[in-house]
Length: 216
Ligand code: G3P
Image 1 (cartoon, rainbow, N blue to C red):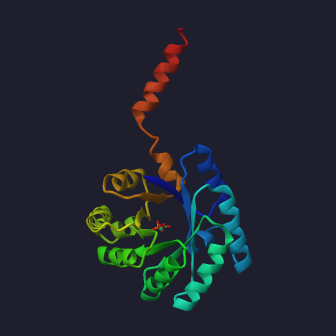
Image 2 (cartoon, rainbow, N blue to C red):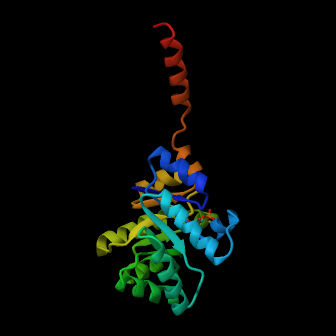
Image 3 (cartoon, rainbow, N blue to C red):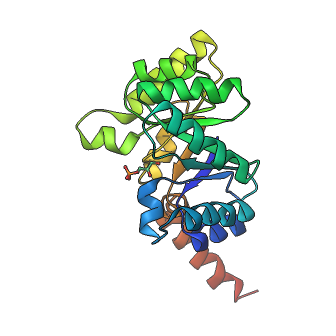
């Protein structure tokens, strides 16, 4: 399973790169706004700065919602760097654009996915990645992991090549469950990835080893 870091924060991306566990980065307009990046040129330059730090795919999201606008924006984003994957919302115009990008050799990440039906449609259009928003499904009282399992089963039965990128991952258990239920990729804040390190018995065991080492 691949680990993407869900952030537009360059320090967090550098930190993840140093750990050696980062396979890519995902961003969205909310994450860009959180970093205070505004204006078209600054946004495009920020994507270039992210790509310079990442040896892997970087999802950059369009903000247009009509076919022509999505395609025009996607072409500009894809031209920034070979690692750019164009992130497109799960709407009718988005599906049309994903088909266009697929036919023209531009990779896509279909975002804001909340149902198996949407997952089938994105795969039919040839999306490279599919982003079901696990945390937000859980927030509404549904089971995000059940959705991952259902999509993974459908994609396996139908031999769809679209990769399941479990998104809106908020904690280490989400990562473990996504792995268990067949996600190809998880994208999450670095804090959730670092949370995988934690176990009190590791801390207790290490303290004891270090104490005993003093006797050697
Ligand atoms: O990858 C999608 C993610 O950024 C959304 O996360 O926590 O806002 O639901 P969240």
